[in-house]
Length: 490
Image 1: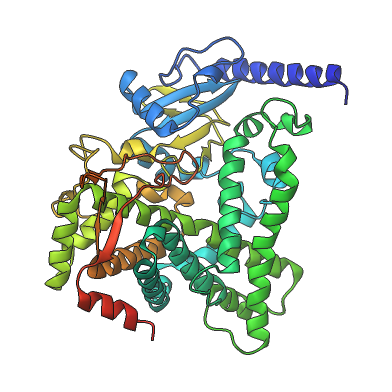
Image 2 (image 1 turned 135 degrees about the vertical axis):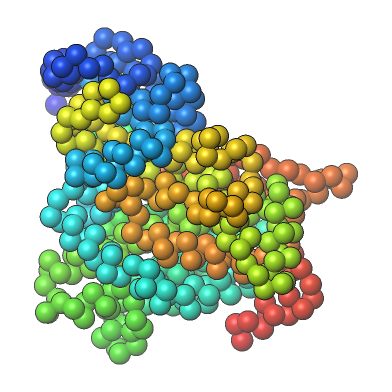
C-alpha cells in the first residue's frame, strides 16, 4: 500500500468521524453534552487525553468542571466518564439494557488472538452463554466449595514468604495463579517456577501492554490496515508473537485438564464440571469451555494486585496491622474483614474497569449522551469520594466498621458487566490477608542509618493497577509461627 493511499485512508477516516460528530450533535435536540475540556475542531480532545493514571486526570476534571459525568471528544468518538456511584448506578445498573455493550475492539482482539475473551466481547448471544457458565461455576455457593484450594495455596504462599521474603511480589502472584489453575483446570501447580503460572503471567502482561499500546487502534479501527511504522500501530510488529502466547493460554492448560480426566486423575474443577455437562465434546462446546477457563486465568491478577496493595498498606500504616493481628490472636475478625474492604477501596485493582458502550441515545441530568459513546466508570473517583469516604487518601479500615459495612462494588464493575469472579476474589483476598497477618509481621526496610524506608504509593497504569515494586521486611511474628508455617505442608 502506497504512502499516498495511506494518507488518503486516514483523511477519509477523520472525515467520517467528523461527520459522525456533526450528525450526533444534530440529534441533540438542544441538550448539551456533559461538561469537559474544550474541544478543538476535528481532533476534539485528542491532545488532552491523559498518557497515564487516567483515573487521576478524570477525577481532577470532575472537580474542575463540577460534574460527576464528563464528556470527551476524541477525533469524533464520544467518551463519557462517570465519576460517582450515583451516576454509575443510574446508568450502568438501572439502564443496563443499553449500557452493557463493549466498544468495538474487533481489530485489536483479532490481532492478538484474544477474541475469546468474555470481558471484551460485545453484548450478545455468545457473551450471554459465557456469562451463564461463569455464574453457574462462580456464584457464592459454588465459590465457597473452592475454599480448601485457596487455603492450600495460602499455605504455599507462607512457605515461600518464609524462605524468600524478598520475593513477596511474585509469591503473591504465584498464590493467585495456583488458585485459578486448581479451580479452573484441576491442575496442582508447583510451589515455584510453575510453567502454567508463567504462561498465565505472560498472557496477562501481553494484555496489559497491548491494551496500553492499542488505544488509538481501538478509537480508529481503520488503522489496522496501516503499516507498523505508522504512529499508533507500532505494536503490530509484536502482535504475531503475542498471538501465539494468547493461543497457548487457551489451549495448553485445557489440554492438561483433559489429560487428567482421561487418566482418571481429575479433581472437581470448572473444566471437568463443564465438560461433564456436554453431550459429547463438540468443537463448539470445547471452544466454550476453553474461553471460560482461560478468562478465569486472565482475572487472577486482580486478587494479586489487591494483595500487593495490602502489603504496601501494612508498611505505611503499621497501626492497622497491629489492630488486625490483635484481633486474629483474640479469634474475633470484624476488623480483618474491614481491612480487606479498605484494601479494595484504597487502591482499586481496576481503577477504570473495562469501558462500556452506549447503544442508543440517552439523557442524564439534562445532558445528551449520544449512541455509540464509550462509557468509562471511574472506580477510583467513586471510591475516593470525600462525601462517602472522609480522608479518602488514607488507609482507614475503621470506616467499614460503622454504618458502611461493605465496600461498594465499584471495585468489581457495574450492571451486567460486573466481574463474575468477585465472590472468589474476595474470599481469596481474605484468606491470603488472614494467613499472612497470622504468621508474619510486615515492616519497612531500614536504611544504613537504621531509618525506615517508606515507599511511595506508585502504581502501574494498565488495565489492572499493580503497586510499583517496593522494599519491605517480612519476618515471622514468633518462633511458634515460623514452626507452624514449616509444618503446614508436611
